[in-house]
Amino acid sequence: MTERVEVRQNVLKENDRIAGELRRGLAERATLCLNLISSPGAGKTSILEGTLEALGGTPLRVAVLTGDIQTERDADRLKRYGFPALQITTGGTCHLDASMVQRAMASLPSPDLDLLLVENVGNLVCPASYDLGEDAKVVVLSVTEGDDKPLKYPGIFRRARLMLLHKIDLLPHTRFSRDAAVADARRVNPEIEVLETSCVSEPGLGAFVRWIEQRLAEKRQAGRPARD
Amino acid sequence: MHELSIAQSIADAAREQASLNGGRRVLRIGVRVGEISGVAADALEFCFGMTVRDTDLDGAVLELEPVPVRYRCASCRHEFHPVEFLADCPACGSTGASMVAGDELGLSFLELE
Image 1 (tube, each protein chain N blue to C red):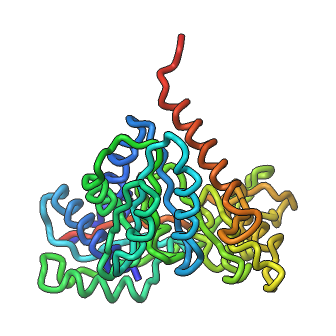
Image 2 (image 1 turned 135 degrees about the vertical axis):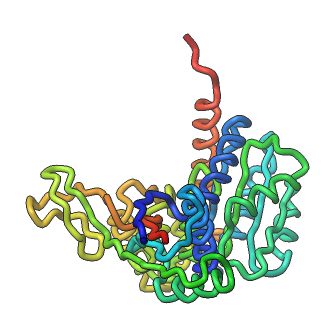
């Protein structure tokens, strides 16, 4: 005799469990964790380089985990800025999952950080499904990719807190409509925040760095015991 | 192509639930797949077959239940399937709607022997 048992369980329960552990550990240390997601070539690594350069003069303790299917090239690029940078080579897997981040974090020189930047594998689909324990997903959309991406890849735009419209200096050379991109992103995620960035000319990465500093302040505030 | 990881997670979850139910053989596994969950049904079925071959779940049927995106209007509570994610309510015309379904990826039932 067969029996049908109703089940209500997230398929990625094990990933969510590990992500929960990571999130608790990060909260205890008041570490802000950002998960950068984009298609390949949108500029994640360059954004991280610029961000690390900007944060180099501050007392902030920062570390970077950078995911790729192959090569250590990104970590080599990011190590130049004086902060620990570890490569997570997934060996074919198209996304990072929470267990990969947990293992990589154990290899960092110290878990006491103000900011942990995680660069996901270049892919607008799969990384959206995996919680890494981060405070926020940041989706990078470079203007050369086209303004139709928010509706073509709604999953990631729905789950991201911030969208960077990147390579914005190239806007005059493309048919990209910033209004359409922002409007479409807000169709799937009315709360998504939007900043414009460029690694080669104005407006630079200043807005993103300030956004990080604001989130850091919030995280510290949240971690402080309530006064009576 | 993260369907192989997803298929393995489904198999793990099904084994866990089956053992909670007396370790009976699993005949069928129901999974709700949201429209924007980012999972391709064909690839998932293919990967599931591969990942359970010659295991205790060999022969178990994966039954995928697609879940369309559904919005609920903040003003009149009407629920609707949005056209290209537009939040305009077809009932009352207001624009404040939020997504209530469509991004899930969850086990819904097991059929046990």
